[in-house]
Length: 254
Image (cartoon, rainbow, N blue to C red):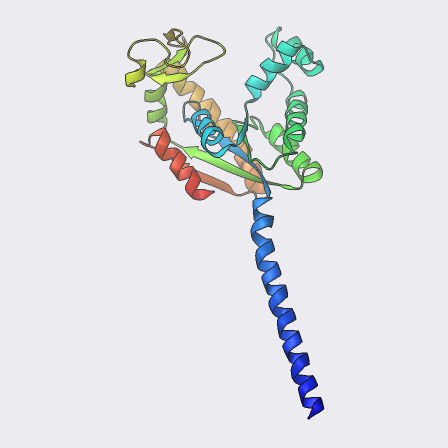
């Protein structure tokens, strides 16, 4: 009789222990997911709206975004070591070497790594070499991050139409982008800063088509590299979609 009671008590204790372990694992899982760090790389032809989507993510989701062009300008303005190197090349009309860009981006990423806010690389990497170097750095030095590629897909005809009708703020600190069909752009004055809206000299049909072809060729090289290492490429078809609709589609896949 005593043995039967002891046996029952042992079974009850074992069952309670199992339930506790299951509950413990269930409650830990969401926290682990919430703490996972993510880096998004946005791909898309000039005029596809990468920058607009990145701005929406910063404003509405509290993401962090990196534009290599803006970061280069900041380093030059602050006269940093990297800034001096960049200025040496740009002042001679030369492209900044991939190694310099990667060093600048890596430094920025490590500075931001103390937060769990997702990071967006807006149009980066720009070359296959940059993609290879970034992959090595993320794998060896920043393994806590998940890397996700988001590609905005849009026909060339739509890109041409968008850019032919594009006007931009002449204020270098603003550089907001509008379309001539947008009501807020009808006055020719930027609603954000009050500066004049202008048309870029190179926003002609011929130049835009050539730019699209060059971008597509370069993008294919980068994405083929990522495919070769098993990196998933997530695509959003943005044809005929408004910026708000593109943002909603992005939220649906994250």
